[in-house]
Length: 427
Image (cartoon, rainbow, N blue to C red):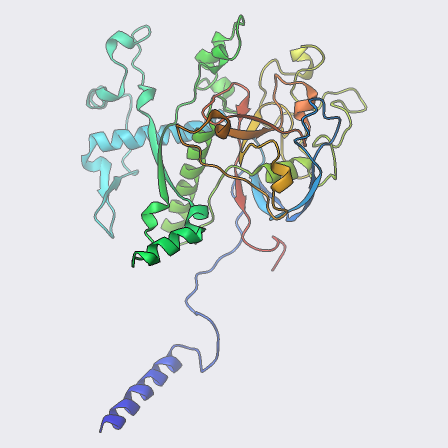
């Protein structure tokens, strides 16, 4: 009787397998979602390839921090321009509106269907010109004694964004798993899930504190908010603010994809130092500049980037300070202003001898600096040169750095997104 029941169970399982559509064959999971390559708006594709990193010209500082090395880079998408004031403002306004929705409550909030967790109801828009709404949100405005000419302005000190990330390098360390096993426990994932609270508003005072005895107050008053500068690169953002923007952009993009039945993509992020140089060279081997070289002018005498010509003839290149992000010609990958305009944050921690121990496969070095770490551990690689730099810093191979908590009028950023696959041409 027992063997009879066992036979019935096996037969039922076999019938179930047949009904599943496998017909006894190894076909893999059949309920996989459809996926196709989507190039995010405003990005260009950079194929996988090999790059010879290192000095492109004389090492004027004699630091030997750019030793020659061959590396291989996985393909990725990269923003064709630096992140603009208007693009970054979308992030700032999203944070502002999230806080306001939470304060208003009621119809401005809804619940997550799966968990009942309160979330923002973006369908309910806020009329910021409504006096009644302004009254309910009075805590978000500067108090009367701090207002300029009586204007009601949002207190930007409140515009804080919480973002999360997983420290995969820490999770991969054997010592963590061995310690958990020794204690008779499973590995605790909370140990590697990190969070950060960042104020997202750019430091508009960077235009003043970056230059002594120089009149730049009009840029402090106008650069980030005035429509005249919408298509100019955002500046005054720290490395951590750039990281926060990247995490928000990932969430914003993938939330939309999931809501529309699409598969999530990988995360937007800052480029590694090697990815940045690979994209900047535009498939030109050992090229000193994105257009090749060896000069900052073409054969007609036209300047090809926004930098500091001569001994300080700033307007000679067509821009006194920053210029629009699509000014000048792009390189052969279709990427604008990889030399000059603003220097750009990368995700890479700066060490003088990094090239001597970098891996040759997607080289990078990360370090999550703590507040009490030595200041030298808070250096991040900055690439590309800026409107206030001489030509040497605009070269594709020149390495320099800035502290991760510094906000400068000459540093901006752009994002990359790892390409998932071998080549965009695969069918």
